[in-house]
Length: 536
Image (cartoon, rainbow, N blue to C red; front, side, top):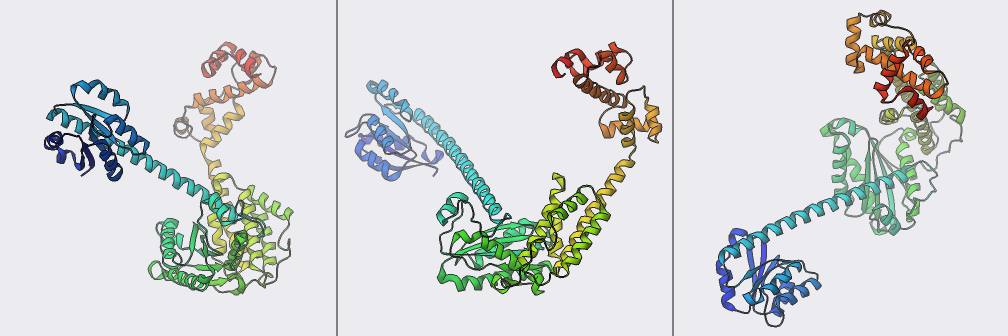
């Protein structure tokens, strides 16, 4: 049954008649109780929580109106259908504002009863749909808010800066949970950095890896720790928050998680996988430091010359690199200039110098190697147009595919050099296009009379083909384009110079001032003189 109803009347015969006449099964209605006075009805409503109530307006203990008010005060949401004799008819009608769907006049008419039952069921159905839609919307908003909070959390955790920094608004687990939507509640924190190229191997990329990682985390870590994780093209980051008594079990399960993921090679083929595990911190203020440790441990494979599972404690004693050993600020600026202006030869010289310096860095602390790499790639990304920033993923493979730091430098040079070579190729191809030559010729010669055939000859194509190119690549005709160029130049002259309208018309290729003015008004909607008043 879809709907539940309580029927209340102090006359037993009325209750029997309503039960007999109603099409309860047809409308999916279950009669959950029958009551003979208002007080018993109120208690039954509180107990059974029906969808609606059919109640006589005059009953012992509480009448129908009083019953409705008591139900509303109790915070119970249900609809009412009131029964009334003729002399109480107007009294029943006054209750429509009190969540009453309809009223039925005694003696009960079968058709009227079932019509009212149908109405109340339709209203309940509509209310349920609206409630479901509202709940779905609220859940969607909650998920979106949680996602946005977690994006901020991971961004702040992984952003560059001192490892001694504290995650903003996370001085206690409670503050962190309130600010970012995390669920930390235990005394120990440990971060696992996963580096892998499996996303590039799996057909569905990062989303499938995320699903796989979530399944394995549930299998190995969620029984002993509160976990949150973040998947990127680099692999993943896991934060395990656990009690001291679960420390050994968590360590064992981190190893089991590594081997479980590694065994996917039997399904997907060989791929790279490295785990870097931080030290344990018992203060949430040490989360950013733990992240740097996990990252350093993962980069430790360049020093230890072996891939697999590496703890920060295994590489923490290595010698630190002097700041500025690899490059200074001026050298980074030169690198950015090479990338921005596509200077391949100079870029090659720059990286050759860096490669020679990198040869002597094999035994330095891996956090310094990682910092050097990210400063390099960060500078390169700054030199790129916004739409090219996706190159970051490709360039990360310069690290992932390397066995030592000098190889990282070499791979990065190859990746950046390949990008510049492709860009130079695109520019050459673009410059060779007839339409580019035609556009350039128009912009250089719009001040004089130019014909389509003249421009075609300058572009080494026929006039017919040039006309076709303008339609296909510029979305307009040759004449319309020339007019557009001339009028745009006229607008600049009107705004920025004191030349007369006649002089401006001649300067943009129109000896006839009146003809120029008509064209200008047709294009802009106002006369040249009016344009000057507004923009001059």
